[in-house]
Length: 280
Image 1 (cartoon, rainbow, N blue to C red):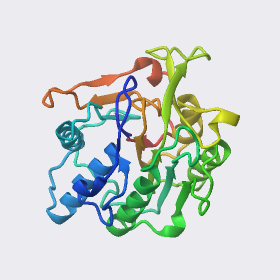
Image 2: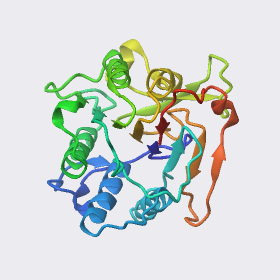
Image 3: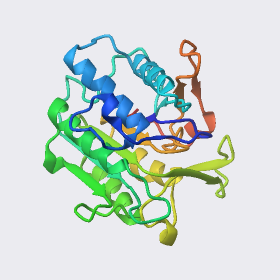
Image 4: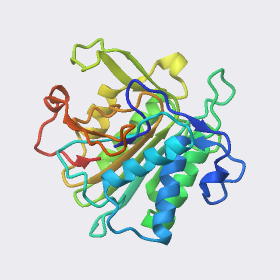
C-alpha cells in the first residue's frame, strides 16, 4: 500500500493540479499524493526508468511534495517482507491473469466536510491504469458520489471489497484506491494497535452508519485475498499510514536518504501466511 501520510498526519488537496501536467487536468482539484504519483508515472512512461524501485518512487513523491510545501510523509507498507529496491510496477510484466480495480472517490458533495478533488483523482487514475496497464473498463468498479456511479456508502464499499476478493484468482492483478476523508479513533476492540488508535476511512454516509476501521479492511480485503494475487492499494486520505494494517513499513522521511523498514509484530500476529496474497 502507498499511503499519502503517516498515521499522525493529515493529507492535502491541490486546488489546481495543472502544474503536475496530468492529462486534462487544467483547473481541476486533486489529492497531493495522487497528483504527485501520476506525475511521476506519466513521466516514467515517456522516459522509462527501468531501475525505479519502490524506494525510489516513495522518495520521489516526498521530494515533489516537499517542493510544493506539503509536509506529509508518504509511506509504503506490505503484507510480507519485500525488497524495497525491487522495481516498481502496478502490473508486473509477467502477469498471466485478469486485472481488476476498485476506485473510490468521495467529495461528500453538499456537506460541511466537502472535498473537491477526489472524483478527479480516481477518474485520472482510471485513465492511467487503462491506457498504460491494460485494465478493462468492465473490470473496474467506480464508487463516486456524483449521482452517476455507485454511491460510496459503507455497505457499497465493503461489498466492492468482497466482490474483488471473491473474483480474484492466483496470477491476477488488483488495484484499489481510496480518495476521501480518513481519520483515527480509539482502538476499542483490544487489538493492541501500537498507537492506541484504529485508522479509518469515511464513507459518504458516515454520519448515519459510521466509519470503516482498519480492522474491517483487513478482514474483508487483505486476509481473504487469494494467494499470488499482485495487489496494490493507494490511500490518499488523512491518517492513512497503516489503514490496511500491513506489518512492514517504509517511510520516506524528511531527510530523504534515510531508510526505515520496520515490522509491526502486533499486526503481523493477525496474519496467517497460508493463503495470503502479497499486498503492497
